[in-house]
Length: 462
Ligand SMILES: *Cc1c(COP(=O)(O)O)cnc(C)c1O
Image 1 (tube, helix red, strand yellow):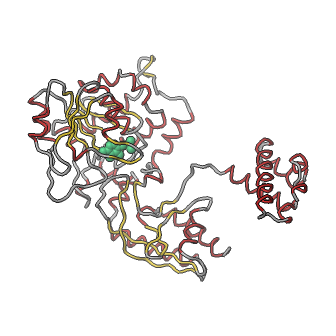
Image 2 (cartoon, rainbow, N blue to C red):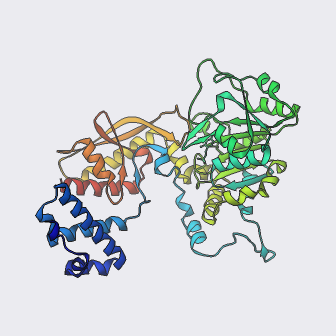
Image 3 (cartoon, rainbow, N blue to C red):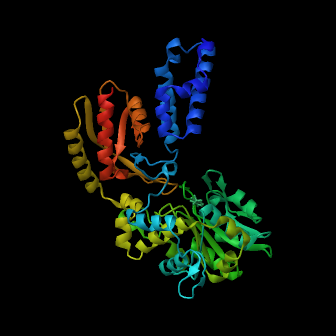
């Protein structure tokens, strides 16, 4: 049977495969044919391939499937039915639809990236975004880098290289993906000076650790965990007071960092970036794609004294962002000039603040639409449940939501989950208590149409 495996050249002459050459570049088809023949050889050697698998039709079909797979982008859109709003695995914050043109213009044309239209000479990258950040937060200066991890690295390298940085033991955070405060500190060349205990740190702990070697007092937001029970931390105001006594700057790694007071919308009362600065922090760093709801970026805002040296730091060149990021970050920040507009147009903020009543109403409408369009053999039901913010933000928060439970006759929830996940436009849900669930909080009305057509084809091809 091994001898019956056709040669690559022969396969390329089959009319069925010739047709594929009209659709795909020749080298791509050759690679696909070679891969399929290698797989067949391996299958025969293992003893789990049949003579039928060597027939023209079967081989061609495998070549076609292989080509289709290579033609699908690895990174592509999915429908997020998990209810986790800033889903780290699904790309965190989705951008506002209103930024589509801004993004395309920046990507496909020339732009004023480093050009000053008034003088007709070279301009500074990011000035537009920096001005907007200052207006929105009340900061004197701002810098934008690749992500918040880069922001912390740049800040520590610039402010504290070779010197000591005082941090509470309760704030030596690991964010995941190997971002750990002690390790970033080491990379920056700053020396970590831990104070206090895991659960309690007092102002006197910071005061007694200050020496001639101290360069910075650092406060890190414990984004993805909570210390509860017998615990106490030093507030930003208290830390600023300690900093002032010894002429030391105070930096806050705010993690998510929000520009909107979310407690007015039923979410936990987090200090806003503006509030950290008003409390006297010299520098605040935060992410662009967590609570802000913009592109992946790290934002530093604070005093001129802290930030001017960073603008000249050699690391900045390595950490700077591209024009598409700058354009979409500027667009996102513009929405914040009117808070109500930000809440309406930034998807993650909208998903976080949509009321339980509105979700229940949307669920009823969606269910009616789905029931009308879908055949028998499918059962749909709404259930109460909980969504999460995700992205290491508000780890204890469970927001009441409405779930749609989907069941297809003759398919287990696991089989249904896999079929939806492996479609050309993947639909990601979750299974709880042996039921497949989609959370309406992270699903748009347009997504419903996609879900309906997915379920139609799954039911039809059972
Ligand atoms: C998320 C987070 C980071 C890392 O931010 P990225 O934008 O993901 O690089 C750093 N510090 C804190 C406290 C965070 O919550």
